[in-house]
Image (cartoon, rainbow, N blue to C red; front, side, top):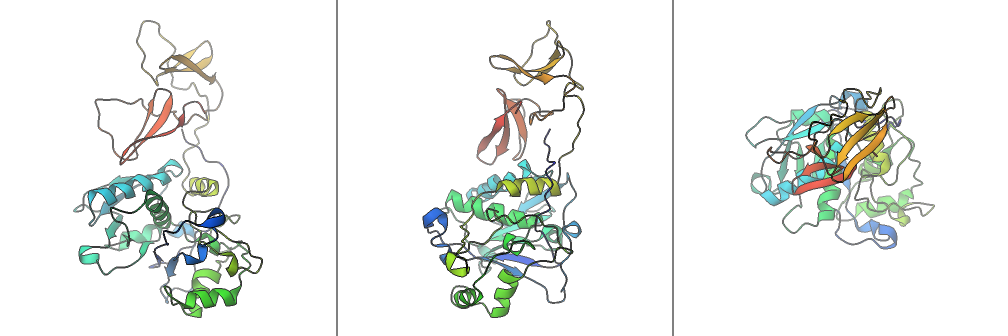
Length: 355
């Protein structure tokens, strides 16, 4: 059983027919904790339909908790597709949602293209926000992925764009962000290539913060995967933000609050049969014995706690690995006392059972 009870309403204001469009970050390695060269990174652009002046609540655009979201690729080779699948499923660990990867000819909620073929002239990487993806035949785009893309770049960009697809916008526009911008320096930088932005575009993409009464928000998180990189030269107090490439702890608890797993509570022994000495048990099987819950491991039995307690075990309700069945990306199993999740390239160990 997965649980997420930490209260966190993070920045996620959404606008109908709005597009979060990301330009490619440079491949340079940042110095000084990935901050020194942040000014060289391209950034994500939020494109707003001019007819919509008011931000709406995340509740207007978020998916149904527990929903299976159908995703398909419109093009791309097996390698780049597998990398997107691999890193998109990071969100499934912390949100009560599931991605179902369907064929290109099937109906889908999220439709992904790469910059090739009929989409060769589509630049940048971007995603429509939340359930707005339903309204577009091409709802997510990766404009620079190819067979030479690094795993870090696959991870950073894929997780970021799927964050948009789940309803998140950029963290620096959090109503409580409080970034002490050097506006003149920012205007000057973004007026040049590769962005060539007007002052109005800079205002909309950097300085605009969403009102607390029209957006879900939380404490400001500079480590969020949804944050722009900010060089020190762009703030008056010289506080910088590096290029974030992984989900932060706040990202994880936030998405679990927006899409919470069921909190069943109750007795950890509920529904678990007593130990039976006449039957054979497999790794991952659970039994009750003398008032406690036990789980079978390769070396014996592990005591998971006394009956009557509430479970925090991530393996609760997850079936043991079965070599005779086929698994899909995102499926979870228990194996040799640990929880595993299927990815496009194999199995990822999510941690030991009983933790």
